[in-house]
Amino acid sequence: MIASLGLILLCQLVAEVAVRALALPLPGPVIGLLLLLCLLLARDRFAWLALGPLRNDGIEDASKGLLAHMSLLFVPAGVGVVQQLDLLEAHGIAIALVLAGSVLITLLVTVMTFLVTARLLSMWGSR
Image 1 (spheres, rainbow, N blue to C red):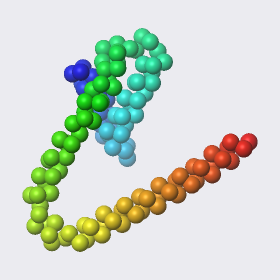
Image 2 (tube, one colour; image 1 turned 120 degrees about the vertical axis):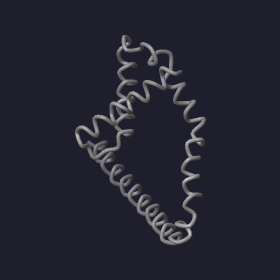
Image 3 (tube, rainbow, N blue to C red; image 1 turned 45 degrees about the vertical axis):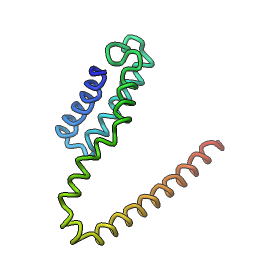
């Protein structure tokens, strides 16, 4: 399990270094997840890659362990909010409006993306 967690963190580290070196406009963890996905897909395609943490569902088990304890990762954020209660009191209404607006925009963009994708797929399927 330690080797699997190490591989997950190594993918994130490599991606973070690449993002900063190449000045990419993407977060390092996103690139790291894509790198890990490519590794897992390659492992399933090429048997000789199934070594170490990539063997016997090691990555999958480590990921399930991380997801099972994900709530612990929110503790520092909660402590940060409690430390800034005076700021939250002063700007709470503005923060709430920005959050509500961003949720609305996200929902609208998601619906539009789904509609465009569905239309493109139906046109592609009718050929």
